[in-house]
Length: 228
Image (cartoon, rainbow, N blue to C red; front, side, top):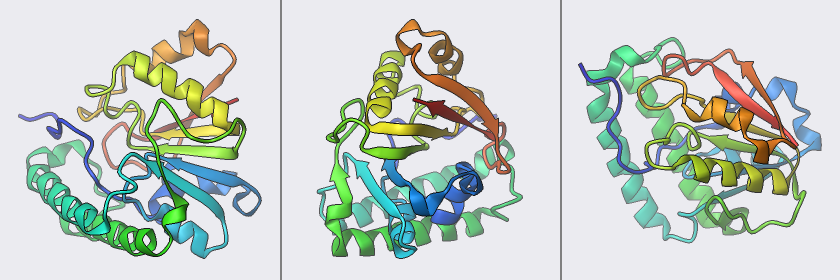
């Protein structure tokens, strides 16, 4: 039995504002009075939807700067790839929030379509960069979010990448970094979690694993809050 999705590279799967609100427990943040950065934002619609609410958000990702039609084509291809694999690993997921694969597909489609429209109309809100190096001055943002990148792709990015990324995220962030999920594609907690908590090079950071009221991939019901 397959224990998880088989993805060799980062795929373009967008998430919506509603999903971010659950991943990162927005109820515990004073959103109207903070500046936010979405790192590895990809084709998520969080930046677009947040700005429509008057919130201060920038998104950054290495794909930004690519023509919208190319991104749209890759979104469609990646979504099809994942949804084709999903029935075989459906047992690894909790279907309480997303009722079924069709419902999940609707969320992913809504996210990338909303993103594409905003990306075309407001490109200045989408900054091209990739961890572990960000083009922002020190303490540029109050809170930084990292969704479905660190830890999840531990088979792609090694431990040193994670350590250097955390140091860089801490440099550009004034208050907190929030990371979700803490599991890999096999629904197991990333082996890097304990290592970063014990890493002497990260002693200036405070790590707090917090339960959240959301779980899609099984065991992915916690986020990491890094206080700088």
